[in-house]
Length: 297
Image 1 (tube, rainbow, N blue to C red):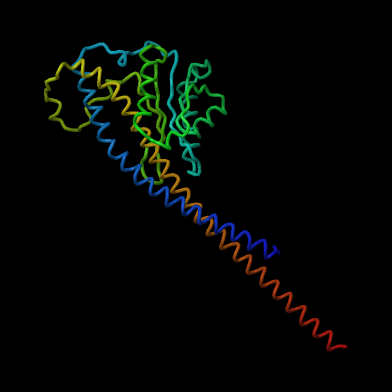
Image 2 (tube, rainbow, N blue to C red):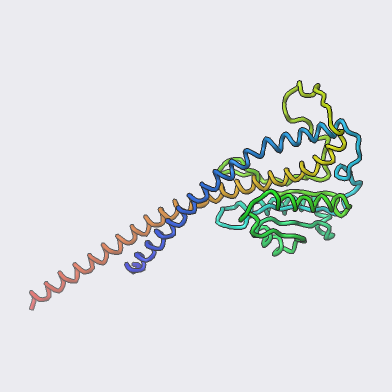
């Protein structure tokens, strides 16, 4: 039977761990509310930006480098959005395995020829892909410590510049899309070249198709300004989606850890009581035996 002191020490340790996981769950819940609010405020803006760019593309015949359609893909870039911290269940590993499967299915020739570059956001993404010898050309560790649009904008601006210069023929974004507190959708989306045919007007209003607009100075000039903003907004939305997903995953993981700690504590208390009862029974037996021996003499 286990030593009573050892069991008591384990129970104390588990109770301390339980307090930590409960506190982390509360912190994650508070961060989730803020992250979810930012994400939900950005979604309509990103959607409307997509609609405006779609309409501008349809009415403008200007040649823009961002709209170029390469004949073949000689080199590609993938921006991977992970997290800086762990203790969030399978949030990171599930996404990373999904990305590896996507690469194996869709980009295997580029990967084998060293023509697939990765930009990682978050410490976990950086460590995972560098350890597996992927070609990580840039990494952003501590990105979520001070989450802001300017830093996200710089990452996408660099990707746009290299696409315009012909260094990359395709640019992808890989991230966890927020569905609910306990559910995230793993997404790899191609943002460059811009697929104007599939953009369409997502407003859902049939009357909007017949509306006409006056553009000042002209549609081409506005499109040249709007396209980079649209792409930056897509990355910003992906970052916010990933941040909200991370907090939700951490909250769920810490809740599960707290419940598991409770169950383990109950099991150890049962063992402790059994060991204590066994020790008391042994002591009583020894006392009775000793008393009987004294009477016999």
